Image 1: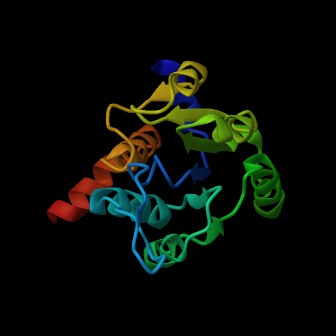
Image 2: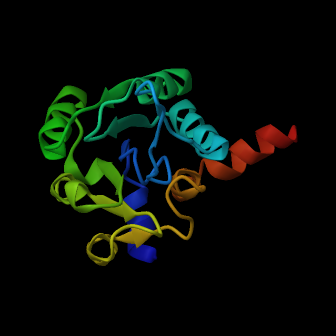
Length: 175
């Protein structure tokens, strides 16, 4: 865990996959073709806490969904890349745009499609129910499953590593 904390101290950009990370991976499809996803509200607050504490946030997902665009917009997530089966290509473009190095990026994923992008980052994280091969290849695995608080766990770990969590909690408590 010491090496994870050391890496977390350098992070400026956090990239999340969507299906299986910010959601439980389930897809609910209506008869008219509407797609529904369930996002955990505590994960959303975690993302906002990161954003408000100076982290750049991005999602890179292979699927394209109007609801993902709406949810990320509501959370103020500026960098949303959908329809990206080659996630490393999107991540490379974002790295250049923001001028961040590999060591300054954390990537949170759950499946094979995430592995090429993960190789471009300094801190790799898998959710608890990620594919076993992905869990084997990362620096850290969350206790929570995707869509069930895993993103919040990541957010709090990064904030704590950078000394920003306790002041944030104190602010919420009004002390």
